[in-house]
Image (cartoon, rainbow, N blue to C red; front, top):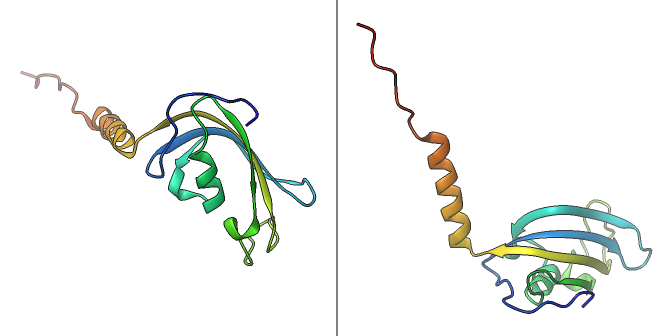
Length: 122
C-alpha cells in the first residue's frame, strides 16, 4: 500500500472512480492510464478487480498481477501474451450499483423532463 486508507472498500458489484497507470512488469512500459476513470469493479481483469476490493477510499496501492489473473496466453493490444502486469491505483471514490442506477435515472429524468409550454396564442 503506497498510501493506506481506512474505511469501506468496494465490492465486486460496485463502481469505482480511480486514477491509474498500468505497465508491463518485464519492461516497465506503460500500456494504459486513466484519470478519474469510472468502471464496474467486475468489469476489469480478475487481478485488477481483486486488488480494487482491497483498497479503501482515498488509498493508493500498487498491484502486481500475474499473467494468469490478467490477459493470460491471449494478450491484447500492447500487452503481449503471458505478461505480468503492474497497476498503480488511487481509489478516489466508489458507489454501489444501486446508487449508480439511481443517479442515472435522476439524470435521465432531468434531461427528459418536460418544460412548461408557453400558453397558446389567442
